[in-house]
Image (cartoon, rainbow, N blue to C red):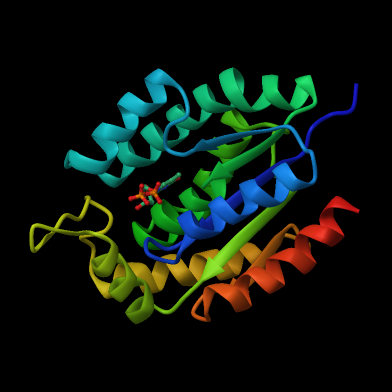
Length: 210
Ligand code: TYD
C-alpha cells in the first residue's frame, strides 16, 4: 500500500494557523485524499494531559522541553506512524519545529540537545512538508487578542503571555530551521489577507500533490 504523507503547520500564536488548517482540510477532501487531522502538544489521551500541564503549569524550561518531546513520542507512535502506514495523510497543527522555535529560540535550550531529543523520540517520522505561517509580533498579537476576547477579558495561556522578545526569538528560530530544512519548510507571509495566502497555498499544494 502507498505510504501516506505527513504535513505540519507552524507559526507563532495568532499567525492564523487555524484558518489555514480548515482550508487545507477542504482542499484535501476535494482531492479525495484520506487524512487524519491532529495537533501538538496532544493528539493522544496522555499527550492531551501533558498539553494541559504545559499550557497552564509553571515549570522549568528543561521540564517543559522533556514534556513536549514525551507528548510527541506518544503522538508519533500511537497516531502518526499508524496512519501513515495505513496510507492516510497526516496533518498536524505543530510538530518538532515548534520545539526548536519555542524551547530552543524562546527558552534558550541548546539546539544540539533538541536534535538529540528529536532523534530519540521522532526518529525517521518527519514531515514531508511544513507550512510556516510567518508574521511579525505586532500582527500576531493583534489577531490573538481579537480571537480571544471573552467577556471583555483576554484569556492567554502560559506561552501566549510571554513578552515580545520571546516571540522575536521564536520567529528567528523558525527562520533558521526553515533555512536548514532543504525546502521541506515553506515560509508563507501570513500578514497578508486570507485570500492572498490561500492563493499561494493552492499553488503550493497543487505542486506537492502532483
Ligand atoms: P497551539 O495549539 O498553537 O495553541 P492554541 O490552541 O492556543 O492555538 O499551541 C500551544 C502552545 O504550545 C503554543 O503556544 C506553542 C507551544 N508549543 C511549544 O512551545 N513547543 C512545542 O513543541 C509545541 C508543539 C507547542
